[in-house]
Length: 113
Image 1 (spheres, rainbow, N blue to C red):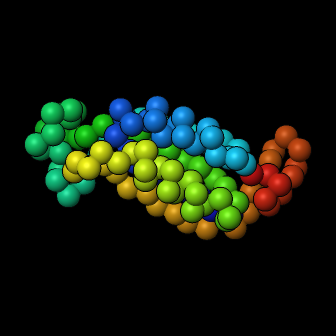
Image 2: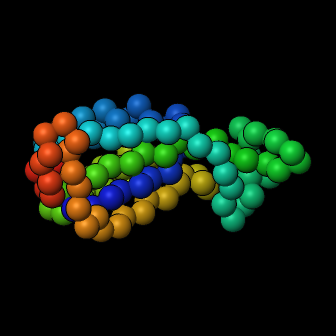
């Protein structure tokens, strides 16, 4: 199993979500509103949040757990739909998951995803 975490610009969320809805076998995703900064520190961006003298840039965090064979397709979809060509388009991180358990049924492993 894979855990895919991506940080994208908020205005690209609808495009990414609509494209992921077309991905056969995708069992779901979690979306969170987040803020932070990268190498550019967010100083020159028009949409920034200033809190305690620190400039933060709003982003959306998407988390997806999937079977190994689906990871490449999901990553390519996010890359394609989140891309604007501008600085700060975001990042995608992928890690392996040892196990999963569905609380309602007790299913474990790939069956729980």
